[in-house]
Length: 136
Image (cartoon, rainbow, N blue to C red):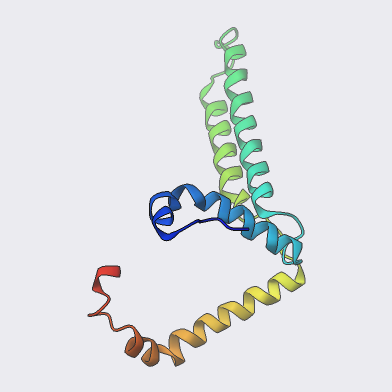
């Protein structure tokens, strides 16, 4: 699947294409067996649950307007916001990897550590910082 027709298109439209790239990468990783389900759909589900919890909290506050002498609304507002934020934050970590996905992640983290330690001198010779200062 060709995402970009040429380099000038990439310069202008890359920020708009990130979501498309992310969808393609995660769907490919899911098809190859690194995740049980597409991580984007899991993250979106938890975000939607958080929004629903916040919506029902705000909706219930309208009902508390009738009986506000009996129930203070502040704890319910805090509860709704905390629920929304916790679902939003923890939803980012909920996509479950398969054993194959966990092994691949450990392998890649080890490879990254290897490259940063062993190949550091080679990388500095190939791409000296003084010649590539415009990239940093």
